[in-house]
Amino acid sequence: MAKEKEKITQELGVNDQTPREIVAELDKYIVGQDEAKKSVAIALRNRWRSHKLPDEMRDDVIPKNILMIGSTGVGKTEIARRLAKLVKAPFIKVEATKFTEVGYVGRDVESIIRDLAQTAVRMVRKQRTEEVKEKAAANAIERLLDVLVPEPKRSQNPLGKLFGNADSDATPAVEEDTKKPGREFVRKRLLAGKMEDQVIELEVADHAKPMVGMFSGSSLEGMGDNLQDMVSSLMPKRMRKRKVTVATARKILEQEEAEKLIDMEEVSETAVELAERSGIVFLDEIDKVAVKGSSSGPDVSREGVQRDILPIVEGSTVMTKYGPVKTDYILFIAAGAFHTAKPSDLIPELQGRFPIRVELKSLLKADFEKILTEPQNALLKQYKALLQTEGLALDFRADAIERIADLAEHVNEQSEDIGARRLHTLLEKLLEQISFEAPDMVKDGKTEVVIDAAYVDERLKDIAKNRDLSQFIL
Ligand SMILES: Nc1ncnc2c1ncn2[C@@H]1O[C@H](COP(=O)(O)OP(=O)(O)OP(=O)(O)O)[C@@H](O)[C@H]1O
Ligand SMILES: [Mg+2]
Image (cartoon, rainbow, N blue to C red; front, side, top):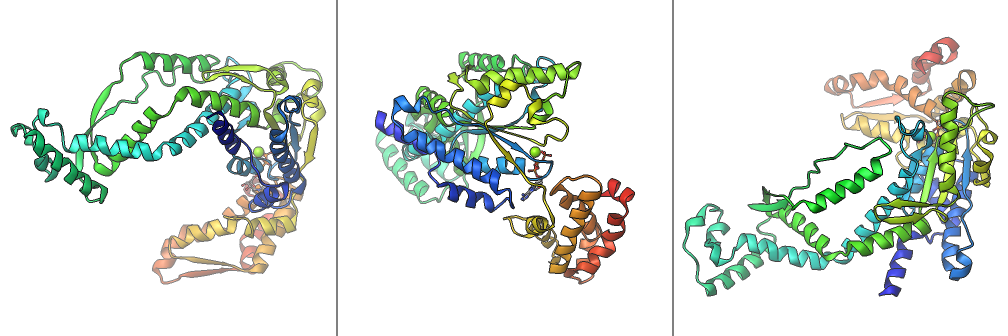
């Protein structure tokens, strides 16, 4: 059993792709930024490596945290988003700015770890649910049959129910031996999927939590969670009747049965271990809590946030409702634009905890061309698909794409470099008229629009070349 558990934990926690494979996966969505992708891939692989080490050595191998630096709109958050889908480990992404002014509007920094534990629990529970799925399904069928073909004591005619005559309560008790064939008959029909749409009345637990939200946003939040759980576990489960189809009822019952079969204590234990050993925290907007020079006013609270974060990054123990979580082996990836503040404006202790620095490059014309067309669900693909729903096909010509990329680079240079976000503003403006008129165009029999360089120039050139105008519009 212990062996088994170990295996499952490993499957859940660690990606076994090679660094090259991880980069290839990220390449599908993010253009360029090879260095950042590489260091992230190495960090993930190091996880895999350290899991292979003998215990006594593994304990000394602490992950090397990463700091990603790059101006706005170059893909930092995008890498985090894609990473989240890619890793099999518990992963959460938080904005450091969320924690300013703790106790007032900010959140308690330890909530990061509580959220991570929660994510881990969800993952393990999902896995366990998968493991008991068949058993739960079988149990659910039995319970469905209990509803469809009630015990004879409760005096219902099974056939009455079967033929949609739900109010046949008054029928006298059926003999014990007539019950059996009824149940088997209904079971066959049920398994053959012939009863999916029939509506039945099901007793379900009322999940409404009376105290939700009471503590949210305050530093009492974590306690609030615990309190809520305590209170709801003390109160008898409220049941209420719901009219549902057999198909829905089966889903609900399978869920309930799975919950009964899963040992939540084991799930919590495994999840805590998983969070400790494999958890990854992405700290976005870290530059927003860095302070330049001497500190006063709001800066104090920013520095305060750094001081709050420090013990967590450095390794401490955070109480969660699933048990204490040690943060020593959690991998932290921080990212920030560092426009005004520099990494050296972070408090020294924190700087030291992010030994790997990677810089994301500013995006240029060639990158923009690729971003427009290449990634899965690239921007142009999105616009095409959206307008296709109206029956209008957009045909972007190569010269148009080049022109858009060119303008994006130009506007970024002359006003502010907002990276790939510039493409969003440009495209919105470019397609504004078509977006507005699409339904009318289709009605008039037009089903295709060609977008070439001339069209781009017509819609955008004047604005793009005029510095004052572009600052407002693009
Ligand atoms: N290298 C890239 N490849 C593909 N898309 C990109 C790239 N860089 C940015 N984008 C796109 O631009 C938008 C903004 O990127 P993202 O959110 O990653 O910026 P950021 O680096 O986190 O900036 P900020 O510092 O402002 O948070 C996203 O929609 C993203 O898809
Ligand atoms: Mg970002």
